Image 1 (tube, helix red, strand yellow):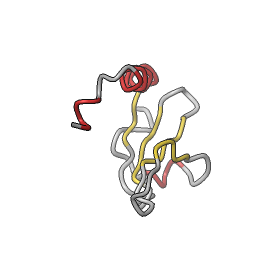
Image 2 (image 1 turned 90 degrees about the vertical axis):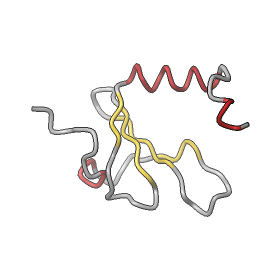
Image 3 (image 1 turned 180 degrees about the horizontal axis):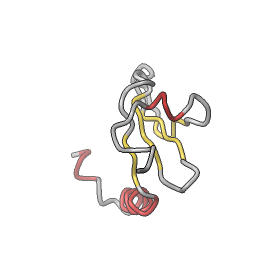
Image 4 (image 1 turned 90 degrees about the horizontal axis):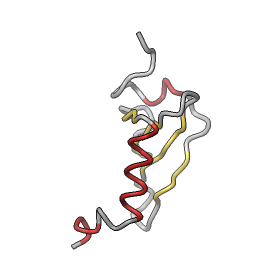
Length: 78
């Protein structure tokens, strides 16, 4: 069984390497991302660093970023 799973405590993935690729003027409440050794990406809420981590395969993150850059998520801003 894979020791890294969706919803696991983010603190179990370590304290180093987390980055805030999306940050704004919201008082420090940000999404943090960690690229895992196998290419998957973990996301966590910065104000809850030991809370649950969402684990995504590389291709899903790639599709999300490409879609956002292409404007496919702009409806969320309206």
